[in-house]
Image (cartoon, rainbow, N blue to C red; front, side):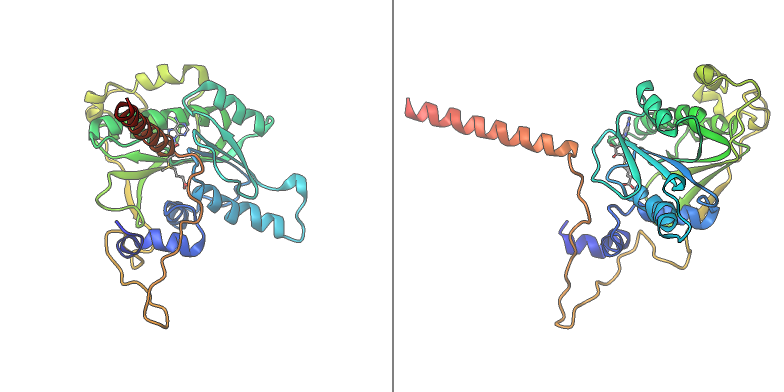
Length: 316
Ligand code: SAM
């Protein structure tokens, strides 16, 4: 797809470039905030799976920059934003970057160290594995990322704090809902307008972190296992924690974002210059070391190798 064609078919991709966001995902976090007011009173945030960094940009623009520019700002009182990803990310003002795997305990330790004994008010996780197109598999790997996020939450989130996590809707959604409900009395699955209807993606908005009494983060997985096996999840009664019951789980599901605003599944005409042409903008910040870059290098190296061999056989 050409750049102008994508600009036409994907209004949020075009708007992201116009407004200086590194990815169209920025609008998803903004629309979740419009509905749930997730940034209210927030001073410390963890952004899990943050590259290329559009959510971190939103956090910087909504929390860090206004505090820094305020006349009563003090250096030691500025919001703390810690962003983690497997991939390196170009710098963003006010964002501390950690390169690491969120499923690895050592990454959680590095994050905790940055908080220096204090706790986060908000943890966001937009993690996504490389999608295979096999929905069950993609949903499973995605749920593992959320559980890794939840592990970090149990170490760094303050009581009353919020957790926002990308989910893939599927047959195990109710299991995940029940697991999240163990820790958050209010869990809503939200679909921002900027997330395409054709995508199984949605976001779990978990409010008022309240771990079970006597909960020890070391035993998180044992506790989650008690919620039930994936096949039995549809019959769980979440209100009583992990106990099995006859009542079905009804998951609060909310569309969010200005409903009269842009529709991510529609094409929009491109704005023309005075001379009647359309100028497509370049992406704001392409990923600095994406996995496909290495694949391209390997492909180039192997085709170079084949040419060298062909040359040798012609010469001999
Ligand atoms: N929120 C980001 C933004 O607005 O720019 C986009 C995130 S992108 C959809 C998903 C990210 O998850 C990728 O950058 C990927 O490297 C990261 N990721 C996937 N698995 C991960 C893991 N185990 N640990 C850390 N990051 C991971």
